[in-house]
Length: 375
Ligand SMILES: *[C@@H]1O[C@H](CO)[C@@H](O)[C@H](O)[C@H]1NC(C)=O
Ligand SMILES: *[C@@H]1O[C@H](CO)[C@@H](O)[C@H](O)[C@H]1NC(C)=O
Ligand SMILES: *[C@@H]1O[C@H](CO)[C@@H](O)[C@H](O)[C@H]1NC(C)=O
Ligand SMILES: *[C@@H]1O[C@H](CO)[C@@H](O)[C@H](O)[C@H]1NC(C)=O
Ligand SMILES: *[C@@H]1O[C@H](CO)[C@@H](O)[C@H](O)[C@H]1NC(C)=O
Image (cartoon, rainbow, N blue to C red; front, side, top):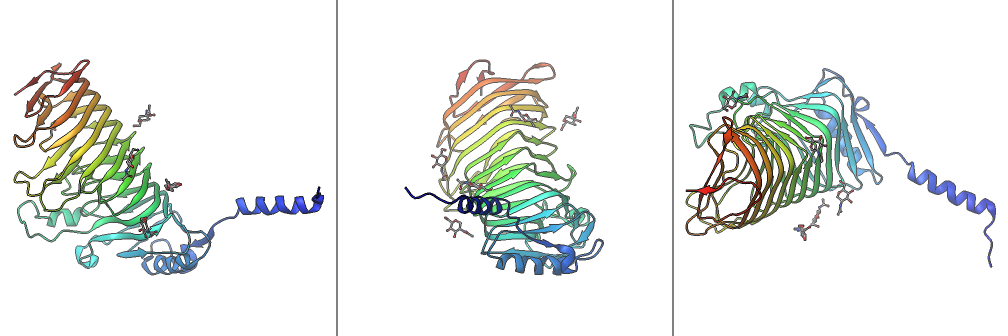
């Protein structure tokens, strides 16, 4: 038998060790001219160019301190995974004119194995834009800029990081596959208009966990083509709650399948978990496999409304206080009644008494304690 010399074995081990501890190539924003209290738009763009061209993994760091940042589009495909670690506070221009009509302030696109991490904050400095927002009255209003666009990313993660006071939605997730938000925070005042937390569309396997979302609109919302999305161990409120929809506004919408909301607390939200559709639904969009479990609602105005053709929806172990007499509202369409709806262990109170359930075109299967369905 061939015997390996001790030296050869040793060299082999050494190689393994050095391979596992290999550090990603480091790009500190300071080395690209990014200074605290300065504008880092050019620095981050140049650091990104080098990181994206690197054939080994790389990491761009933005240290503690305040930094100004204009609109950026950080695009792939890149040659190897990239992490951006942000520990400082990044400030958007408060003036809408300086956003140059951009749909999103910080865009990450066409990447595989991307990580955004750190204890830092992206502050959209929204108050001026909120005052100018007339979208509630004016259908042709100009939508202000969102904080983040995560578009066409695979196997990517946002770890930590805070999004604050976006001018519009905080985060839009589009065309992503296997994308996780872990420990992500969103902060905006309850009266700020259209500051939805995370909107997901045409994406699969998007998982939100350990998040804290307080905002002026939906905490999390799902648009068409969302598949296998979950929200777990997350606090939502203030805000409008967790929504599927609005759906059915356009033709040719893709189905929404597989949505799990588990161990979440909703506090002072207008709604709990709801499925929203447009009344004159043109497309026959299907919504199926929705599961809401272990949810605590504190003073939620409309805990569980829904109004769409839906199937396989379960509400399980939902407790807390409702701000209205109806704790559960299941209004399904008469043309396409809801199927396979299950309510189990629902304990919602209104002014100390048990909240009621209001139902139409649905015969939910009731297990354990749950309010009886009345029209
Ligand atoms: C992401 O995955 C999709 C589907 O596998 C693939 O078509 C696309 O090229 C991938 N994008 C990147 C940037 O790797
Ligand atoms: C999903 O992405 C993560 C990185 O965020 C990666 O570790 C994991 O292997 C990916 N899962 C699959 C099924 O590819
Ligand atoms: C969604 O998850 C289910 C169950 O884990 C799996 O069978 C299905 O393939 C997934 N669908 C997509 C589009 O990833
Ligand atoms: C439920 O979520 C909270 C955070 O909101 C977390 O602290 C707790 O550990 C979670 N419980 C379980 C059983 O995962
Ligand atoms: C409960 O919600 C109502 C209506 O949204 C609000 O006016 C009230 O202040 C909330 N109560 C508490 C204790 O937060």
